Length: 506
Ligand code: ADP
Image (cartoon, rainbow, N blue to C red; front, side, top):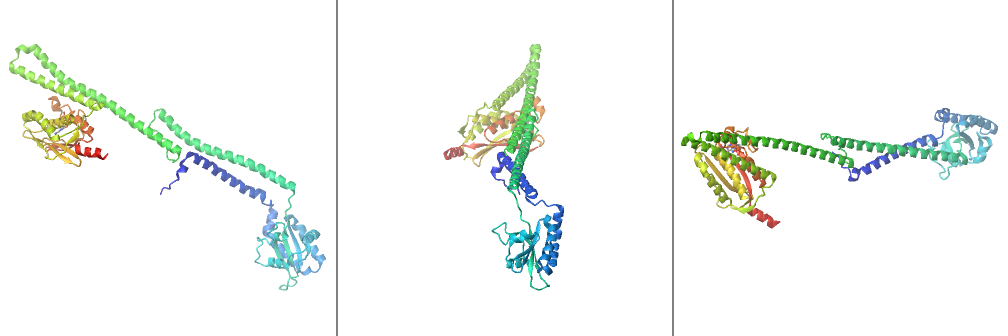
């Protein structure tokens, strides 16, 4: 699962500062351990370390054994200790022998040590001689200088094995003596090192943090440069949650938007070009036909029989009708495209409008032998729409329904209330539409059957105009069709009542 990062860590400022502080902390910690290891630990050479690690304990035990028989003989005892002392002084160890009553009686450092110690608590020394004594615990925790704190091994000196000890051999570290001069030098050295290390660590941390930051900024800037040079497919890194990530995401979004915009513009340009080609082509054929017939008239007008002349005139009128319809459709489309066709919305009864359009279509329907019908329930809410535009939609759908029908076919306009809207369907039982051309019929200038175009019946704009108007009314013109069975075109309009209820609510 993705862990939720608290919002503040998404700020670039916090991240850079965090990185910088973390680096400082790491380098500071490393320096601390290094100082501990090099400056504060005793600087032991290999021989000293070997003696302390491997030999000390055994040698001191041995010394205890050799000293036990001569506890009572001060000269012999002093000799043995002195000889041992000469050897171990350089390891910074010293040994003292205390009698059973705790008095210091001899030492590796003859006079000074016994004089300095004087006496030890015999009970404490006896306890230290036990196997389980832990020399890490300080008997006199109030004083760092107390001799008992430096003891690291105690051997009982028994004349005979098992007998009460006549005294103890006490081994200790030498006291650490630091002169004021040494202390000052060490402090100075540490201070200088601290400043140097702090400066180095700070500079290094700063450089790393800045490198990290500038690398990311560079990646974004390289992206923007690519966009500036026209490569809109380039994307900048945008995975991070911080400000730079957000900047990257927004830049990418901007690039995608520009990309689609440019694509749309290109498509539009292509479309306009195609449109002009189509229009020129569509205007040219009827004009050429007209010119031909008119020229015939000019040349042979007086020689023509009445029949011939009438046929010519019919063709001329047909071509003029086609031109008229084409120009009319083009004007409508361009007005709809430009958004100039402001819809004059009003509440009106749809039934009357349907009747009006049907009456206008009756003439053509009769010539084609197609019956027109309506299915409208008595109780129907008023619709809120532009009546002239909706009449145009119905006209175009009925024209098609009649045009693409067969003799004795039927076209029905069915209206019904549907969920706060009114649904209008224009249904015919004509030739239907093949599935492969169905997706294209709303395209401008698309015609399923080009022979009709030649006859001047089609221009491929009727459904495009109807769709545009229906969409302007907040609906969509949809079609269902089966070849050989007929087609049904459906759209919906807002019912006037719901609108009133809505505005009352608001
Ligand atoms: P036009 O009718 O001028 O050809 P339209 O945009 O009105 O242009 O229709 C586009 C195409 O859709 C028509 O050429 C025709 O192939 C098909 N079409 C439209 N309405 C019907 C229908 N009721 N029955 C069969 N085909 C239809």
